Length: 324
Ligand code: EAX
Image (cartoon, rainbow, N blue to C red; front, side, top):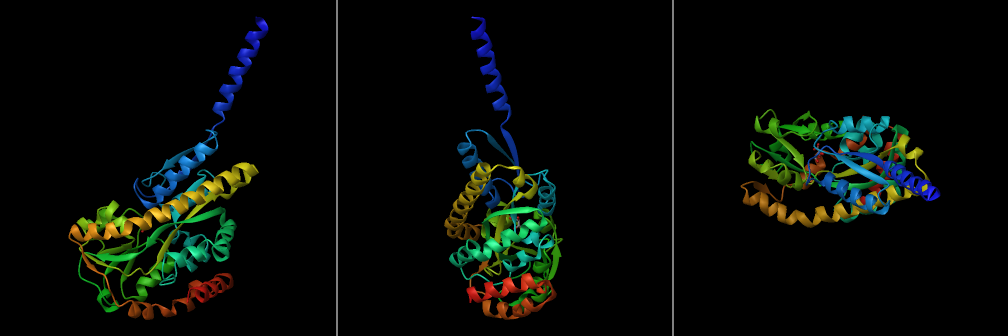
């Protein structure tokens, strides 16, 4: 009997300690539930918790509860946050190589974006991020960005003259809008209040943002510029990554890439209905702006200083060749 009791208490002890060992992974996103980043995060959580039999637990910090995207990236670098689903724009100040994928009018469609990002050129970007403390896992998407504003219909570059446009914290995005004649104002997410109070006239983001954040209430005009295909880079803290065993790394990598693919197709499938909804809500949409004119205006950006680093320059050349 005594033996039995000892065995039983040992068993209970083992169960209790193994339950206590369930590691909690912190995952940061800046946007709110229902947003593109959260759809990736929630899918990842579901997959990894299922596959690790409860040994890994994911806690999603959304709605900027860890700060803006730059601040989340800093915490990932430090290792105080393990994972992030972060728009590629703000990576600009950590590693200039990401400017390559935010290059204006680079990808003609989703298929081409997938082909480059899921291929060797995308892998070069993910690997390069290790130099700044990130383990790049895969690409999910924000989507093709479109211009909106509260002042006037925009169909050509000259219509943009003087518009105060909020841009992400990215030197490239600022240059794009300067070159197009706007007055670009870098500002972290979220920006509803600034738009509402007319501190800024406009912004640029994919269709889902206008629906989820109800920008149709405060932005009358939209132009389907699709000027930048905005990826999210799904990253882990390199310090944390190095502390993981091989099995856990594989689990995390596979679950994140599956979540990314799931989210990309989910996002794309919803775009048509979103456009209809935005029109129904009263937005005036310019569906056929003079894209050639916009494209011409930014054509020399590849020669500016932001692309002077030889590694960045070479990769941009390669991507431009493959997307022509
Ligand atoms: O998804 O800051 C931005 O414009 C980003 O696209 C934001 O994460 C919304």
